[in-house]
Image (cartoon, rainbow, N blue to C red; front, side, top):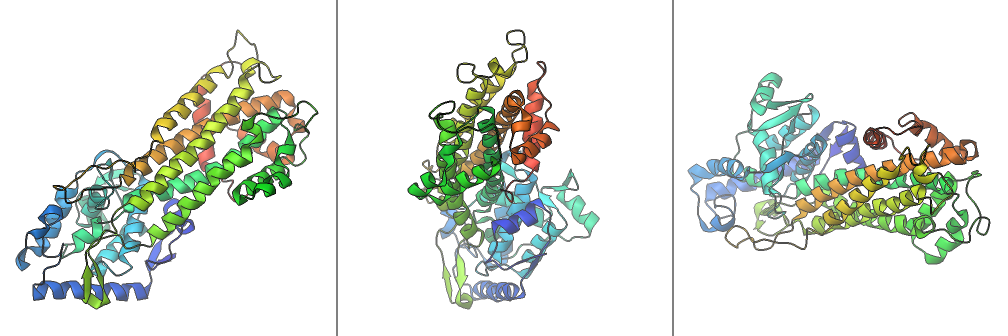
Length: 498
């Protein structure tokens, strides 16, 4: 059970809750703060003070006053009118992360919701009722309005949900589970949708997947080092300490450990003086991507515990201030950085694939074919990797440099952070497939070199991977091998192993 307070949520806890199904509860102190904050909203309504989003319209309609009798209808209309997302739904794990992150933000006690809203979000998480949320339609400021509106629909018994592996109308699941839909009151609709939780939830899932891939890329690169009889001297600790980047030093150390005991790697001058950059510069290139992932982790964990709606209520209601914490620029830039960092794992991997299959660059059978000419072997696997890498280059174009004014120019600069996060996810899926291709080719190369000469660590990895993709003894439909290997990589964890 993870206790949520609005202040301490980490990526490790996101993993526990969203990937491992851990349940959540609310810290009592946070619930008390939510209750106190709600009193301030009710006072605004009763005293007929003018406060944005409580008794005014939204966006360009902020100068339209709303009567006390209509403040609840205002919130319902907001959710229904803003639920105009389109396209394929977010993966279910992202929808779950959105519930978690919106709940955690509201628990900071600056948003003016009733405790009932927080309790309903807990119930949805703990019973695994996950909103179906279209991916497209957010500008990333005033927060993720469209995606979060689809989330909020579920609280009021509308929209659709994932439940026990199927898609249902929300109201049907609520009846089955004995749940009563929420009737939104003043400020609550706005509090639910004015935030960055779509891009941040997608970003969290991206980071968790990219983190695993980064470790896996080192194991697969080590396998390639053996398949190409790479020069281990390039990983000497003195080289990397001389530069000083800790991530680079760590990559070199992990690969030295993975290759410890290998009789396939060589020393400089034995077969060649230097390797190509795609082998020799693995610590420098992978290490730089690790630096970016560390940056992204820092920004995500700040945003997990941030109040990102508007207006915010402080000092027991004495101070109610409109601002712009819903603007997604910090996460937009982080996601664009992640796109580039993740894409580079595939970019250098594809160059290693080329060295594995190109007979002009190695002493292996051409294209790792068992009958070169009659059988094409891994020739088109490299084509596929090259295509995925090229696609990543277009997806890696920064989304955050774009902006289109909205709401009659009231909202005249937006982040496009959710687009950045979605594109990062697409890149990560492509990276996994490129690494799957490198893994398949590297396994063929070490098979020709002699599996018995591998390091104990890579041999264990090889034996497990061989249960997924058998040796290439004749041409076959390699698409199936790639997808099976990619699916295996998605399931295994190397992040706790060296």
